[in-house]
Length: 325
Ligand SMILES: Nc1ncnc2c1ncn2[C@@H]1O[C@H](COP(=O)(O)OP(=O)(O)OP(=O)(O)O)[C@@H](O)[C@H]1O
Image (cartoon, rainbow, N blue to C red; front, side, top):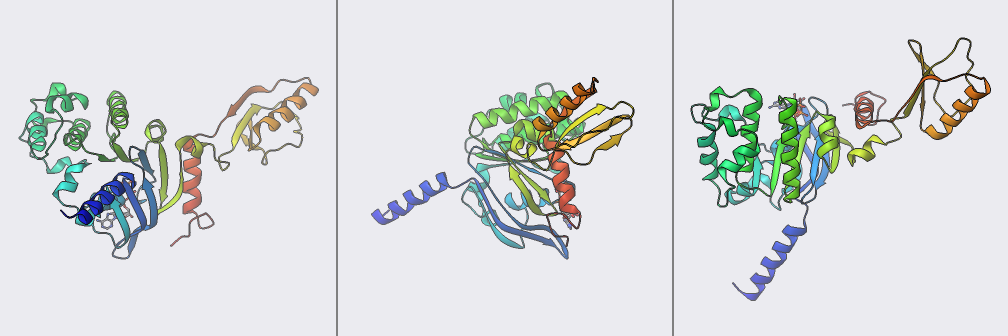
């Protein structure tokens, strides 16, 4: 290698280490006349857990399939670990953990045999027994794949994605069909991946999962990124107001205050506000002045779920933030 080639190689290696794990620019995917992904841009930093969140048909799986190199995009640019997945070779595949469709596995092989078979495909695989333990299938090691339940098959998928000790893992709805205990252990496992510096791209419908696991979340609706933030900052967005609720007494006449027009729900009055401290002061001063209690008073902070529902609702209504095609 000449001195010049060595320098180019060093520059390339440095660039690959500093470049985000995933860079998506103006990605578009059309299935015939159906636009599934529309001008989508985002990046995932190395070691980050990034969640794509969105309603059914938002384009999450299509995006992940393009990033995995399983689907050719219509337009836009994509780099995964410094490589265009459309041209990702064997070496690149070895660096990326992909949760396979277990439907394609030979159901006659046992869990242990399948994980061992996949481990042999990689240069530096993890330990087969440890990986099976980690996904909670230790007692199913000798069971044939065809005898596993839906949730157990997804755990097997996860084991196959992790066995190659990848730098980046794609987890498309990793806990769908898991019972609550299995979900918790999958979460712990994903936390461990974070501890090891593995980058994770996750798609999920479960807001608690995203809240618990993700460093950042991109909300996708109709193929577009409509919001991107940390889960907690997304939950704090002004769009999702704090709700103050209580049971008003007969003939109560509410004073003016920093809230939207009051809403009645059964015997309760709901006040939505983006200035909760001031609203509570106005409300409690009024009640004390009237020698009354604010019976059943509750104050509810907006959750990630509230923000998500409001965002996706706005994006799919014609007057909302995203243009309707
Ligand atoms: N192979 C395909 N051929 C034609 N249209 C497709 C195909 N795959 C997906 N679509 C369409 O593209 C859009 C995006 O689908 P995609 O599966 O990517 O969404 P998603 O966000 O993953 O949905 P879900 O949360 O339900 O899994 C949908 O309207 C879907 O009907």
